[in-house]
Image (cartoon, rainbow, N blue to C red; front, side, top):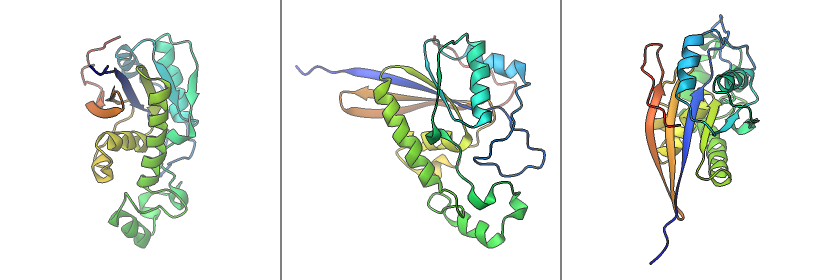
Length: 216
């Protein structure tokens, strides 16, 4: 009888805390300050996170500082690995502008197919899907069977959801993810076969959302 090797990576995707952005500008990969003042939400989220997990984040301050804060609350003392592939979508010429500043023609062209179309001198969502998907595959192999806590950005997490949905980018873009929200996705490995399971999206999306059961 053939031996069946079953393992699971449990992904804990967390969107960073709110950015300091009074002008409501598009910030993409711009490195803005982050508001870490919501102690109640940080503490509630930290209680749901597993022990002995791999921690990863992006070089952007809002994600990096959120990860440090959560890791401290969970008493994690290891290294938090940073990956460029987890950055938010590059908004190119739109960085630092409001939606009202974006030329109507450019906006209409982009929204005609936001998965395939690139922002001028920036990225398409398909580009984000590719870089995030490749990294997830690498980390699944490197940390096979582990919990992975990834503190990242809405575009990044939408790309991970899209990967779990089989690559349907338009479906991934329909999800709205709040700051300090949790998205839970499992990568289930059975020999050379991989199947995904989405357990929850936008958990802790509001301050009164009850914390999910933790399996530490």
